[in-house]
Image 1 (cartoon, rainbow, N blue to C red):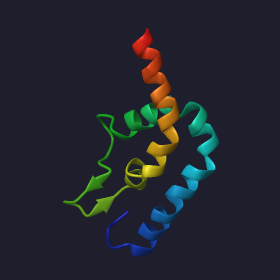
Image 2: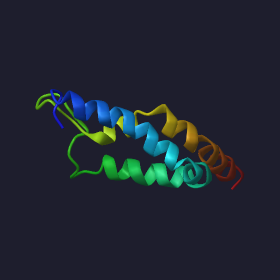
Image 3: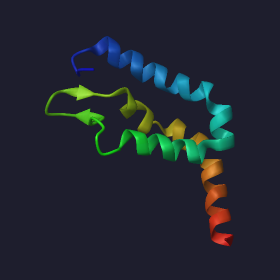
Length: 88
């Protein structure tokens, strides 16, 4: 969507946290692998940019990736995965 589309930007900004809250039980249980897979999908080689300032475009993925809620809900499983990997 374009920067000028204020209604779409507002809707995406409001609905991204709602979607994260709806999926919070799953994220608390299996957040680390889901977040890693999602970030690999968003930042893959042939993917369009999530924030393209030259063309004035922003992707909905930008609101999800920069959301502190996603990091907060994935924190327990990420810390558990680090703990398990250290003990090997």
